[in-house]
Every structure is written in structure tokens, then in C-alpha cells.
Image 1 (cartoon, one colour):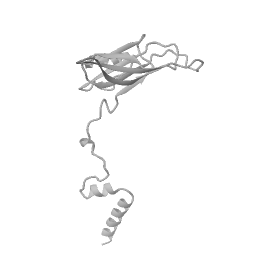
Image 2 (tube, one colour):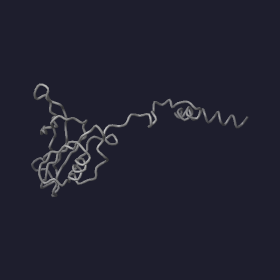
Image 3 (cartoon, one colour):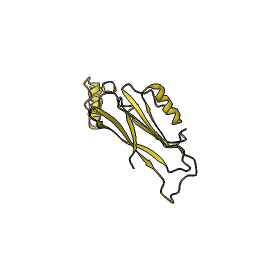
Length: 168
């Protein structure tokens, strides 16, 4: 009888301390906390939920705009970014990359702002990749090191021609 009292007390304490889902699980009921088991969740977009990457050091000596539509181009893009790819190019996706090229100091950067389809003729679209380029303000303290900023973004695959445009 005493053991039954301890079991009942444990159940009350678990429920009172917001561990109701544990009690439900132990009772064979589904989780009631709104958490969906990982196996039932839809896959995250991109690579582990990431679509954007950027950095300060690439192998690009001059401004380059790239599109990767297959694994070989994807690996080449990351080789230019001077880092390992975060994973294989996902099916149904392509990547766009903006490489600013060599800069004499720190304080420079690049970010892909937007990717939007634009109609250029009836029955013909093009994809516009707009990017922001960060330039250090006059008199700003910056590192005295060579940099070569880059940004890469995964986007849904399209056969439309791609145009890069500086937004700022």
C-alpha cells in the first residue's frame, strides 16, 4: 500500500512540475505538449535548415557571380569560398554566389538581400539576385588585412536566366 502511495505521489509531482508529457508517455498516451517527433516533422529546407552562408576570406581575386546547378559546380563554388561545402547540393535546389574579390582592409562584406522572379518579356522571366555590399565608412577603424568577402544562398531550382544586381 505504501508503494502505491509513492507511485501516486510521483505522478502528482511530475504533473505539478510541468512534466505532464512524461506522465502521458509513461501511460502510453501520445505527447500532449505539441512537440512533433523528429521522424514525423517535414524536412527542413536547404541544408540543416540553412539557406545562407557568408564569410570574409575567399580565393576570389576579383568580383565574381556564380550559379551552381549540379554537385560539381556546388563543390567549385565552395572551393572558391575557401571552405568545405556544408553538405551536398540538395535535390530541387540551386545555389547563387557573390564574391567581391580582394579588398585591402577589413570592414567589407556582402549579403544576398533578395531573390525575385521578374518578367522581362511576355512568356520570359529572369531571376534577379540583389545583394548588399558593405563598405567601411571613411575614418572607420578597420583591420589591416586582406579580405575577400563572399555570400552563397540556396534557392529553389529554376531554368530562368539569373542576373545579379547590387541593391545599395
